[in-house]
Image (cartoon, rainbow, N blue to C red):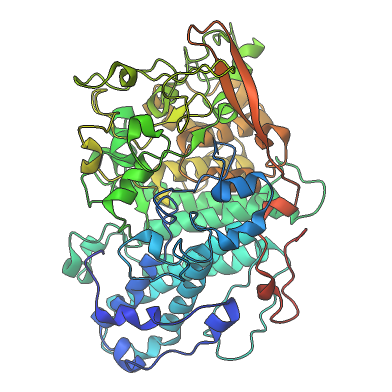
Length: 623
């Protein structure tokens, strides 16, 4: 895909976009006649191709100082993360370093064809542009006379997929949004739907059409042979099923179910939509069964999904870890990719201009449980056996994923000769009186942890970038949709619809089995049977599993909002851990208490001018 470009993609990239109305009112430019645009498969695909560049890569769309984790999982003192903590969600418009800024960090609207993700349009503007491009394709189907039926199908299938996808990108941040299915040339009169469900069901029709028209694998199609070796990022039937399920599960979730009304209950979903979502995810699992995808089989293979991929190639494609379902077009510079991979590693170790995100103690404590498969809370309750958590040794006996993805004090960070003694082991202690270790000092970890999920590590000797450049050999990427996510969403949707132990009507896998499949590869015991038997407890465990498996991948903020829990104290208070060098005490302390009210802080506010075009487009509640 990255090499499949023709000059026609510049056509719509020349358009100026200042607001939703101005953008949608712009008629197709005539620098190249529209008849010529859709005359051949090559020119038609060239027009479609720009939509891939409009898929925002959250981890590299800001700057070298990536700001993309807005949940309770991390803390940083500035940029949009700080605005979210303070409840200033209207700050999104002017952000320079986050993927939710209106303009790029350079104060520009963004060039869709720029080789660096940070210089392309961000979520709002990119989605509006993507929706319009999709509608231009669909409105000109009759001009595709020079295409075979299979070629026409894949052009239209991509357009339907992207129209749905870009609507979902807007919906998950701003909520209810009209399903735009025409190329506007006059006054916009499409009202804002009353419910999120109405939007989602309308968008679902686009996904259904995309599923019908898209191939399972581009390499197996005649038109795909022309770009063999560059088809990994193209949308497929599997991607359409996965995002169809996600669209329906989001619509079924408590926040959307209660539609901003009082009395929200985190365990109440729309069961009908959840059942539909489970069936869509089941189709992806069938494709896995047919050999199109495969889960990483163990934690060593997992690296091939997250970062152990040679430069300029797609992660998650090897047979032992073929988890890639859909990602953006990439194209970021080496420096930005390195900064993304080192985002959770402070500069004294990573030597990167990033390293600004601090993994919070609260998120790690509540989600990364024990080696026995229990959360720390359940382990300490004694209800499931003898407790194994020792508050005086809080890093011992933990879930293996804790040790794989998080640095704690005294962890080995390098065995390599020539590395200073200070950098061979993590020094993350801080006694709260100004005495601290080398990696807890100024410009380093503020919480007592570092997350290393995307940071290259081979035989324990490449954690320290200084002097070896090993990180430059690899491509870490935040994948928009991977197979692990499908398993997690399938389990959640199926549990809502049928319970923990009843399989889907479309696939012989229960929610319990789906979660245990993920635990097996991590070497974590199965979910305790007593927890499985308790519907609410099992939902809590599903969510904890999702938090761990997708940790630091930019999903958390969306999840705690759609579950309707973001305003609860457990998710508002961000904490760090004070402890001394000799581990004689461990004290949790509050870094910040987030401002989060329901429903005000669950949705981004629209820019004021977006709500003033016509009656019928109200602002989000509280703004």
